[in-house]
Image (tube, rainbow, N blue to C red; front, side, top):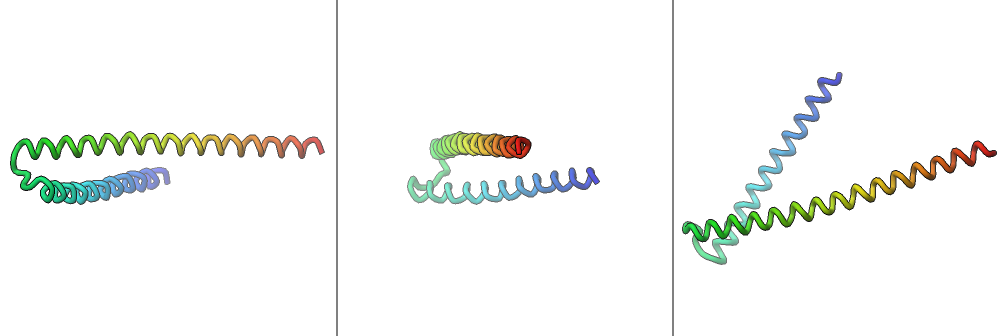
Length: 98
């Protein structure tokens, strides 16, 4: 039984990664088209380097932002869990006193 759960988890991770790759390629194409429209043909080395730097800065910015948001959400979830545990303990304690 555990083997099938492991296989399903791995397949889910692979499928998620595949969709992420497809999305990244779509964004890559879109950003390249925007660059071509604004700056002209990208066939020169400076244009390609500019594009690479731009995409790298964008990726770092969004990675940091998503990490911050995930950390904030995790902290909120932990706080909610602690409050729920405390409330449950108080209810249990009040029932014992009755």
